[in-house]
Length: 298
Image 1 (cartoon, helix red, strand yellow):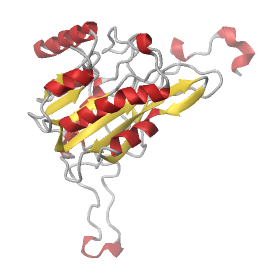
Image 2 (cartoon, helix red, strand yellow; image 1 turned 90 degrees about the vertical axis):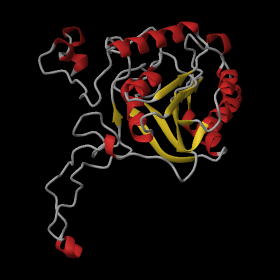
Image 3 (cartoon, one colour; image 1 turned 45 degrees about the vertical axis):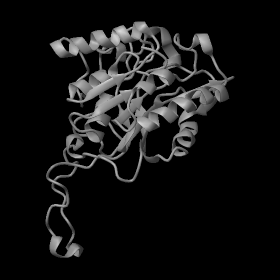
Image 4 (cartoon, helix red, strand yellow; image 1 turned 60 degrees about the horizontal axis):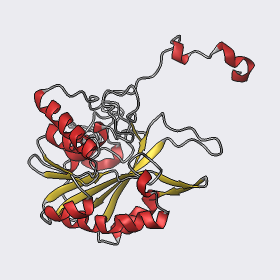
């Protein structure tokens, strides 16, 4: 437990294959209220932490930075824009800008309601570890064949029998994931989510597991300098990786330790990887227009 800026000094440089984290957004969550900052102050606070995170990543490793928006007086500042500059200035290369879409969140009244956040995947060099096999999905059109214009390939299947190469648009359904829609669509951790804890801004295990499976090998080390409820270290442990988590809150560190212990004894509930988003069926109460809405609903 402790401040990331100090605790990161205890970790050996070039020792982590993946750093994956979601830093505080400076939007007034309970763990931010004692130090609400301007946008410039917020970025200045994170800059030296980013320096140290980058130093811990192996030459063939990755940084996955999950972020949203900063809002000031109703004006939206997309934080991924600012973090792109901060991280590429340290020599990292952006490989994908991935959209995580969810269907529930805060409702806006003077702009469209935000329903997505951004995951920036950076590599430290052009020589990086990437394992496609664990995240392949079934071909969308397995019967598709090469046309007659493809010479000796004409008439043969055009797809890979092992499955489809994911795109940076991910839909979290077994057959649609990484398919034709370029969105990572999975529910955010709200009241009825099986992973919900006391943490007010928790990201789902499924989001981290995709990164762990594709960007690390068993035995690799995964670092999260803002570990919160422990989702990233749980995802690492679940797939045979080592996890290092840092947080300044003893309450969250204790929570992460309890959840990790529950994983090891088989009592931790997480949302299954690739489980389809539940859609309400016609006739369900939650899908029925309330009588009180009357003509307003027409």
